Structures are given as structure tokens and as C-alpha cells.
Image 1 (spheres, rainbow, N blue to C red):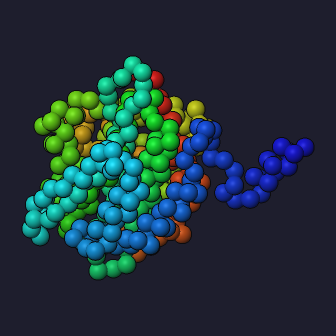
Image 2 (cartoon, rainbow, N blue to C red):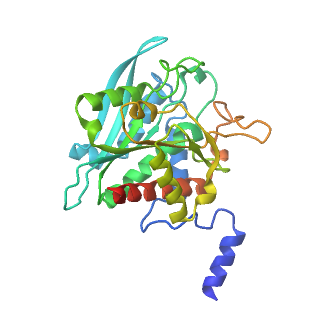
Image 3 (cartoon, rainbow, N blue to C red):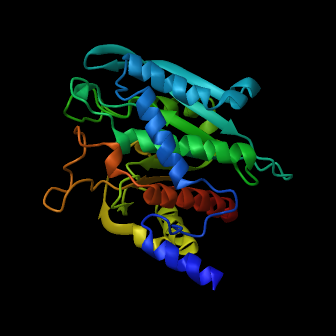
Length: 310
């Protein structure tokens, strides 16, 4: 009777039902939502070169003080040539080494961009879904892996800078600055050969979440995402739409790294599916703890499945 009452309570209280079969000690969607608000309070406008951009870097850094102390936090500072001249950018990398007794040599990279668009700097664009909630998700995943060190491959978090274009018109040269730089750097030092999978989070916090079948992504990783959906009971949040997206996974795909983009590009109204994208309407009220719980559970399950794949 007690369990029946609990199940009935979940049924009548919106957002209270568990999204799926989360792992023990897993990331909380409510906590990610709270962290997103904190991030926006600290750095609402995060375009490159602004005080908010520096505040965003400080916010991320402050959440990884233990990793910083151990030398597992890296600030990849670089200068990008942009349509408005050279700009200093920062990729931020947090490393969680595997504690596997077999010392498996390999890395799973979990990534998201953290800045907002330069060309939207003069309006109140905060990018709650587009950059903020996925930054919060990565921070929460980092806190999870701090307490539950990876048992298979090492897990690295990559907070990319300069994903957005400087000018309003997106081009191959004016976009993906951080991921292009990071892919080149890791190619030069040999790291890229150790990356077993690159998994990107983008725009996966909004209330009507359904993650696209992103067709640029590596097919076996799309298959693992489908399996992760089945294993967690979250298949209903996957693959309503199929489309190809230009995103931070492309520079890694081009260098032969298996890569997957978890993105829900449809972000708006039935009459205008992109109504909130890159507008002042990309705000906290569009997000939900349930969607962020779904995203967190899928990420954790994907890491487990990639580990099992060998």
C-alpha cells in the first residue's frame, strides 16, 4: 500500500516521477537545474571578451578546485583569428583518470560549449538552453565522477569556447573555434589517438525534450544512444527527428574520432520550431528538471556502454 501511494503521488505531481533507471548516486536533474540558475546569475551574458565570459570561466574553475589542486584541470588558452580580429579564448579541460586495475588506456570526452553569441551581445540573451544548462550538466557529471571515479576508460570533461559564430552568419571559418583548436592540439600531442568517443551535449534541457538522430554522428554511437534509451526506459525522448547539425563534434569526426552530438535542435513553438533559438526567449522557464534528468541518465549510461564495448 505504501508503494502504491508513492506511485500515485508520482503520477499526480508533475516532474516528480523518475525519468528512468538512474544509477546509484547518479546526477540529479533538479540539481542541474539549480546549478544552471546559479551559472546564469554569475554570468548571464558570456560573449567572448566580456566580464561575463571571465565570470563563466571562474564559475567552472571554482567547481573543480580538487582537480585543479591535483593538476587535472587544464586551461587551454589560445588566440583565435575572427572576423573582428584576434580574440583570446579558453577551452577548459577536467580529467578524471580511470581507476581500473587493468589500467585501460583510453579516454571518453564529454563536451559542451559555455559561451554565448558575440553578435547577440547587445540584447538580453542568456542562452539558458543553449550553453548554460549543458555547462551545468557537465559540472554535475564532474562532481559525480569525483565521487565515483571511472572504472573503465578515463573521462575528460571539455568546456569549449567559441562554438558560436562572431558574426550573425555562421560559416565553417567563423564557428567552432575551441573544438577546432582542441582537435588540432590533441592531434599534435597524440592524445586524439586515445579518445574512444567524443560525446557532445547541446540544447538538451528544454521542457519538450526529444533528442535528434544527428546524422553526422558516428553510427555505432547512435546505436549505443538508442540502447541507452532502452536500458534506462527513456526511448520516448529520442529520435523524433533526424537531421545533420554543424556542431563541436565535427572537428573530431574529421580527425577520425567516433563522435556523437546529443542535441534537440527544435526549440520553439509548433508554428515556429526555432522560435527560442538565439533569442531573448532562451530563458530558465523553458527548462525542466525532468529533461535534465533524462540527459544526465543518458550520459551516464552511454559512458557505461562505451566502456563495455571495449
